[in-house]
Length: 109
Length: 113
Image (cartoon, rainbow over all chains, first blue to last red; front, side, top):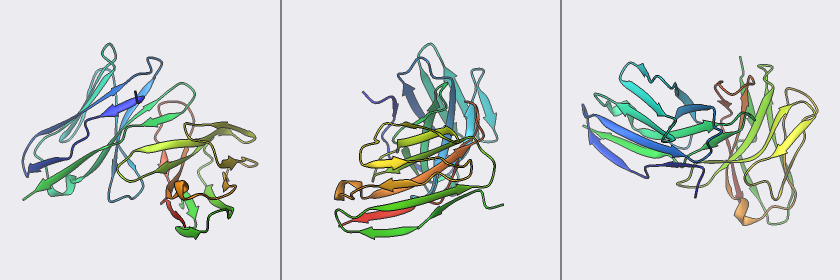
């Protein structure tokens, strides 16, 4: 079993739709959690950190459930520019980052 | 502010050749890492370093060596290239600690023929 698993996708949604991505992790010692965005095999860039209390950044909402070892990302009112691959990332205390395989989102007009 | 600089951006090697991928950061970050990304997959950790003089293996270390003689540089050496090492390689640096953002270089697209 992979240490970080994501919905395989791809997700194809119309503009304005709400879409949710899920991620599970197996290492209970994991300490910090992130969502990264990657465009067309370019370098990944941080989208947002994920906090236990849940956090929101504009149209994006991230949730963490430590008991279930589950992370989610919700995108509301999807834009064409949201089309990308979204990577779930989990850090351990050792500073090692483990990436999920990513979920590809295509937003269509 | 250059951030994380990787060279070269593209490389073609013949099976059995060796080469070094360069990575440099100018942000005085303690942590640096090398990842590879194969088509349709996420990033897999090859080697990482938590400070100058300290390196450790990641998930897929075989066939690669690293060293960290300075805070700024973290080169990745392919000892004897194999077609299975055809991939996109990313170098990343982090300020240190577990809650910090990773900054990535632009990647090196390596093909081994």
